[in-house]
Length: 100
Image (cartoon, rainbow, N blue to C red):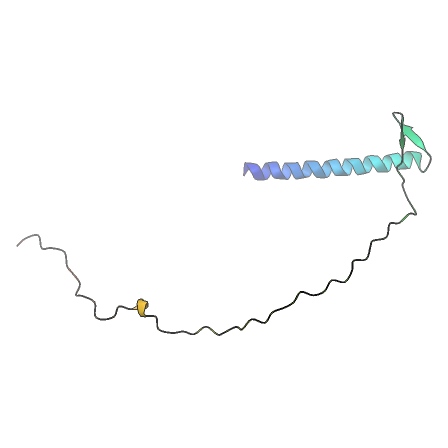
């Protein structure tokens, strides 16, 4: 139970961190727009909206794997000799008589 709680807390922390970074990037883009600017002496290359689109490469058509035909047989219900003893069972034994 303790592991589940810590796992949920870790996931919530990662989600909060992700949302905070996204929000900070949007605030920076809204404050400076497309104008070149610097943060602590390092130029910021964040673009709010870009016209450059990277096309997704088309994957080649892969051949289908060779399918082998497997002969399937219907299971047969048959008598198994081990399921019943081969003859009559011995008579049942009773506990010994205490008074003889």
